[in-house]
Length: 413
Ligand code: FDA
Image (cartoon, rainbow, N blue to C red; front, side, top):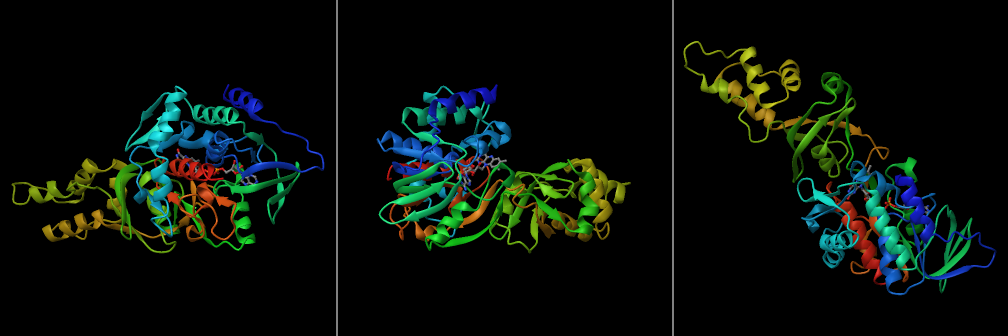
């Protein structure tokens, strides 16, 4: 059903031409028909620009379709610049201010797409992510965008114009927009092409790393915890000055869940992270309160029931097994309380790009105009979306960056 709808729309907007040796001329060529490329194409097309939107995949917007568990967390109504990581924390402000969550919601409303707020300002489709992709493809069609799939670009040259050699022939345009995304989920067609183009033109790229990604654990920690795979509990995950209070999930290889994914984007790759395993709770209070009362128990069984009252039972039992309090004195219990609110663990690593939702790092923002996303070095060359060194927190912020940076470039090309 979903496939039919998407391919039906594609047929309406696609003019896949088996091109002859003659080169095809457009005002703008956009490479990458993901969230950012589609938005850029719509904005440029609405301005009457002749736009070719090229993708090497056999369908556009694949990540939109799998996002948000198939319901696409398409924006966040609380979007602010502090929800983004970047070498220059000010860079995203301009684009985010000029294309807001409300701007995207206006489109969603125009297309009568039902949605709901799940939590923390995160907006999801009621039905399916297909609604968002269909909306973008309809807008592309109305803006006269030419969508060309299965296009593999072998070479990009530039003199007065940009020339792209591909299996579909040669394309030329005055403006070239790179919207090829990051490195996450290679099996869905992620490539390093955007970074290669940047380097080809002498544009700096900040080191890339997987972001919003589960942690793996070292052998001993893994043996102690990972058979609890599936257990989840609310924590505060901290690294450096960042902290996130959300759920953590134990997996068969380590830790995941929103709190872990969020903090993973800030992790330095080798140091310990800190977890408050029971935020806002006084775990040992029942034991301390019982001090002095007749028959009060302060043994392992009492500690177990105190922990079980605040944590998932299996996790509580395991903590007492592998990391028990030093004793039952007030002092030892108070120390244990502190220990569980600032529990440290050093991840072995992350699950890498195969499981990362995003790529942190990318095209250096110092190289780009914050207003238009155009290269300062090479006029006419633009970078938008995830390929740029702007990475959102979990919760719809990455799509908002894709829409906002795409709109910024689309209004300028
Ligand atoms: P995107 O990756 O979407 O698009 C890049 C396009 O370029 C692709 O169509 C690709 O085929 C094409 N391409 C790549 N190399 C090419 C080449 N050499 N030649 C031609 N084309 C090429 N974010 C969010 O805000 N809410 C959410 O719910 C989710 N959920 C989510 C789930 C999962 C599993 C993942 C992996 C990611 C998310 N995200 C998310 C993140 C979000 O999907 C991501 O930030 C955006 O899709 C980035 O948009 P871009 O258009 O920049 O890249």
